[in-house]
Amino acid sequence: MHDGLWGSEMVSRIQSQPGIKPASWMSQIEFINHLILFNNMIITVLAEQYGGKTTLASLMLEHLDEQIKPMLITARAPCNRELIIDEIATRFHLKNDEHTDISSLVAQINERRSHVLLIIDDAQHLPEVFIKEVLLAIKNQECFNYFHICLFADYSLVGTLNGFAASFFKGLIHILDLGKLTASEALDYTKIRAKQLRLDAIVPSEKQLKQFYQTTDGSIARINTLIESFLLNTTSTSKEPLINTIKKIAIPIGSALGAGLICLFFVKNLINESSIPETTLQHEVAVKTESMPSFIAHWQQQATHEIIEHKLAINQNLDSPLENKTVIAEATRAQVKEELNRPQTSPVEEEKRYTVQLVASPDKRDMERYLKSNKLLYANARLSHYLEKNKEVWYVLTIGEFSNMSEAQQSIARLPPPLRKLNPWVRPISSLG
Image (cartoon, rainbow, N blue to C red; front, side):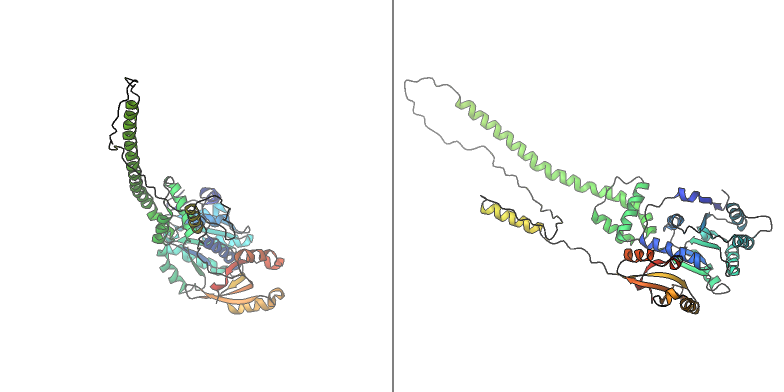
């Protein structure tokens, strides 16, 4: 632990265990693996503050290619280059003295011919002079590119990177944005955060969770900012319906008990009066019956019935023979059956197609030469392109078209061994031009 620098070593694998694995994040990790093994550039992942950068960095450590030896550092302000150089030299057992700089460390790493990845979290705290030194070292690697670096930062680093990309380091900086979560992924992440805040005993309704997702729009930064107030507000609002429900139940039950006690009192008096013994049996006594008004209150309890809809299979047979039932019972059964057999609508997901990406490069001529020189690819592969957010065109070689992601992933195992060594990965066809 130093001022301006925290962490390193492989302790990071144990230190942070991400609870979710969003599909968009896993796709980005596969792409980063590809960039590391087949390209020479600095990779930057950008997100808002509390937007999941540290979680993605820890998740990436667990899913890097086996050929890559990683090291994770978290930068703290103020941060100086000497501390970072010392950390790298210590971690990878490199020679280090007062004249050692980034270029000399990169030269030692390239001599070993083993891929090394330096991951720096909160990279917005890095001094510009250090970033410039790293870019120079990466540019000078040329074909012997075994040193790689991935920066995780907020958007305050964009100005510095754009300044470098517009000058001597054009094509050496690749920027990725941390995407939003889907509704199901946001729900899983909300549960994890609630458990970390010790508020997992609070269970919001589906309607409340849907409103929370619409408010956050799947942004991890917004979820982290609003979740505590959302859960606490859910607790206060959920108490009011409970009190109202208790009142609604207590009033008719209290009325029923009161009416029952009154009935019991009058019935008991009538029984006592009818049990008095007759005083004489010899003379018939004309008894004049008088009509007494009824003191028994007429009370009826009205119950509200809710018809609960169940998800049933379309071909499920709900008809069962009923005998000796009245017309009213038959009508009631038919109504319930109609409610139960009401078809459930489900959102229709847009069908996507996928392909397998083999290699990628910003140089179209290199890709065409590579395609013509490879007999396995020339007949079946397809050269496509896509546009990065910085308006840079990338060219990719893809093979095959598949209706779903799992089918595309299974096809990778059937590729010839020389193609599997390229570490192919799956991507949507819609993302290609």
